[in-house]
Image (cartoon, rainbow over all chains, first blue to last red; front, side, top):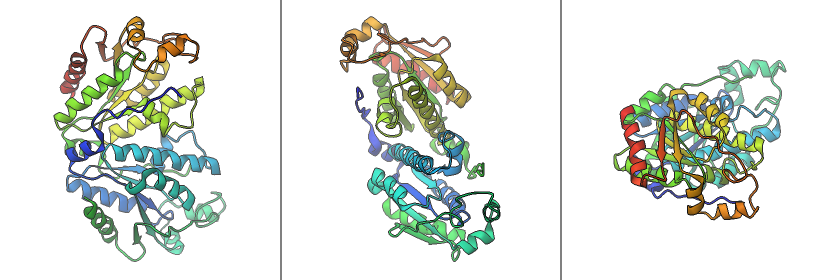
Amino acid sequence: MNITWHDHGIGKKGREKLLGQKAVLLWFTGLSGSGKSTIASGLQKKLMAEGKLCYILDGDNIRHGLNSDLGFGAADREENIRRIGEVGRLFVDAAVITIVSFISPYKKDRDKVRSLLGKHFIEVFVKCSIDECEKRDPKGLYVKARNGEIPDFTGVSAPYEEPLNAEIVVDSDRLSVEECVSRVYDYLCKLQ
Amino acid sequence: MNITWHDHGIGKKGREKLLGQKAVLLWFTGLSGSGKSTIASGLQKKLMAEGKLCYILDGDNIRHGLNSDLGFGAADREENIRRIGEVGRLFVDAAVITIVSFISPYKKDRDKVRSLLGKHFIEVFVKCSIDECEKRDPKGLYVKARNGEIPDFTGVSAPYEEPLNAEIVVDSDRLSVEECVSRVYDYLCKLQ
């Protein structure tokens, strides 16, 4: 391969100093309807209010652009996560506090991203029972899944592998959105 | 497709206000050895010194990560540029002044990224004669290309389509690196 790595002489540290923050990748995993996007959004607002630059790499949004060529088969799902992980790595290198909000049901896939980001990977398990998620059903997806309109739906017809060693666990069926946001925010403050 | 778009209630404008800058994608195109990376690096230093957050999406670096699954055939080269464009779009949305340094020899490919980014796409043509690039040959690639060790090498055995309507043209065989950096910087200042 005739390619060489350019450092460009500034580096993550310089950018973190400029922004006055330490960058990490917060990886929100959990069932559909568990509150990942809502908590991510609340966290972003809180961080921005504190003058911290934060960006949400939303799994759904990326499906519209970067990963619009990918389907929902096993290989494509794996590639989808790989690319989100790689983009997350670039964002963290740019010194942005980066949030990924993505069901990501398989431990293997999440661990791949973890190995890519090392200590900058912070797994946030948004823990909510399937019953509660199905009761909320904000996008009406559980109804469709139960009717067989969506195949391989996580929690219904496909497995969700709970994280065993997540850096942060928020029980979103027990805590309010504000409380969940605070849990993650407090963890971040310790890193800064 | 069971996917919906999340705005997350902050938006590019909020982030631009936080950073005190307007984000664009500066797309550096030109022959190998024309000085793209050097000028990009100089521009980054200048921007950072002014307190502006800037990030270089280097074509070579991305080959190591996000696009490590891609080869150098026609379809893969096109996909390579598409993904860089999509990642650039995410970075601009994050309010980061984003620099892409990439030979990108085909007008069609560059125009695709332009249509993706709209007014946020700023094409910077780093104009340098093939003779001068070959004389510099910083990575020793022209020698290899002339020896037939690298097939389809832009400017030697593959075409380079010069931009006809680039927002910025810097004659890097006539101007110093500092002068080239200033040209781009001055253009950016008018946008801020």
